Image (cartoon, rainbow, N blue to C red; front, side, top):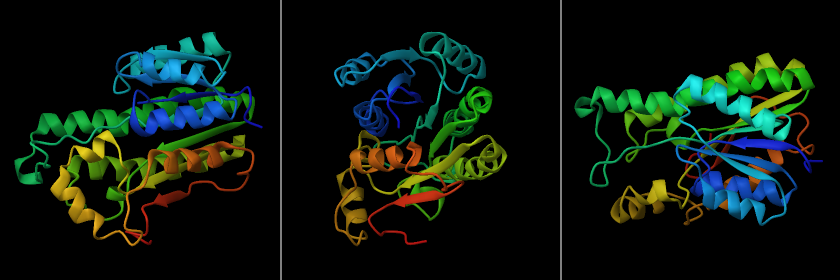
Amino acid sequence: MLKGKTALITGAGRGIGRAIALELARAGVNIAVNDYNVPNETVELVRNEGVRSQGYGADVSDFQAVSQMVEQIVQDFGGIDILINNAGISPKHDGRKHHLYEMDPAEWQKVVDINLNGAFYCTRYVAPIMMANKWGRIVNLGSMAARVFSPVAGIHYCATKAGVLGLTRVSAGELAPYNILVNAIAPGRIDSEMTRAAGEEANKAILSTIPLNKYGTVEDVAKTVKFLVSEENGYIVGAVIDINGGRAML
């Protein structure tokens, strides 16, 4: 049962992260909501579901900030049972990506720091808590862009999301003996703020390549996350669950 457990969800101020927070809250999970700034709106929405929630403004690309945040959550909630590494960015320039030959190294580094380092830092500091309890669930948000060429996502986003899948496999193998199940989700085109930033023309072109002929929703992702962190999942470890309407069948 998920009721009474505590989840830390990064990048939960909007979009997929917020949807995951609400889905888990409806299952009785207490939610520690993270974003760069304290995500008060998400916190209030979660509390309206009848569970405890607290917001934590912390930059996941800063390992000291992550360490301090995790310590504070443990003090506030008594522990962390579930970690959702959702925080991520995909910079656009007038609706389009920068190609590798025009990529600003500073932009590359920022995406690496948030998308990949952030997932590592959070896993690094939360894992010992779960190991001590001999129970835990971690879900990392990857992307279809980590598995196939993307016409809209920059090389930094694709590379970091591929790194997240590698981080998932290694951490899954190392943590499974402690009854900690680590998995990843690779969403395709999900209707969210990040997707809309690519522009209407690009999104229409992508829609024509999706067999289901529709975009996914943030709820599609959130419901899959709920299954992966629940007791109904007892044997899925190190997997990547593709949610892309059939656009990439791997």
